[in-house]
Length: 166
Image 1 (cartoon, rainbow, N blue to C red):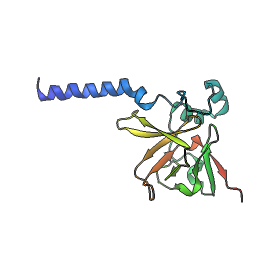
Image 2 (image 1 turned 90 degrees about the vertical axis):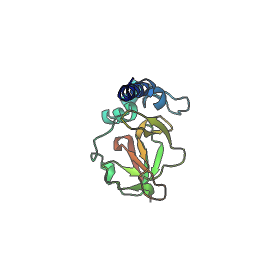
Image 3 (image 1 turned 180 degrees about the vertical axis):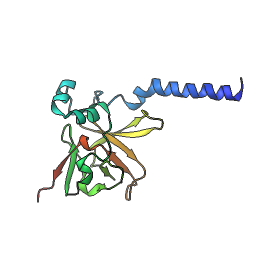
Image 4 (image 1 turned 30 degrees about the vertical axis):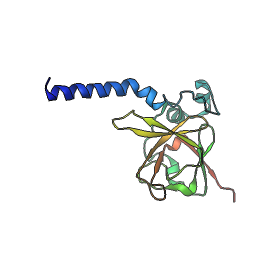
């Protein structure tokens, strides 16, 4: 066996393992039941509760088109919550303009989200889900500002904004 043949076979093997193991490594789709979730609804109940765009993102793991969410420009004091279950996720004080077209934050509220390995594209990413309902919110990257150095890149249709009461 030549080196070229070996590398070709190894590449095919890596792809096969990634495809076969994807579901177990990612924890399934955003709609997969999790024993730790406080809020569990049927697919029909989620469809009735959410807009079509929010359903596709929160329950199916889709991504909204960048720059389409009005929450990108939301700069008032308040809290960003899950659009599916209304659990508070991010304080407005952690929001910043990442110039990516999605609402971005440098930290979450305590215990508001969970992390899951996402292998749906060529490179691994860390998916962020609501800890209460398991809804897909977006991904976190390590290119954010201080103090955490993180960029929680969230889908606006997965969020609801609640202004602070003055």
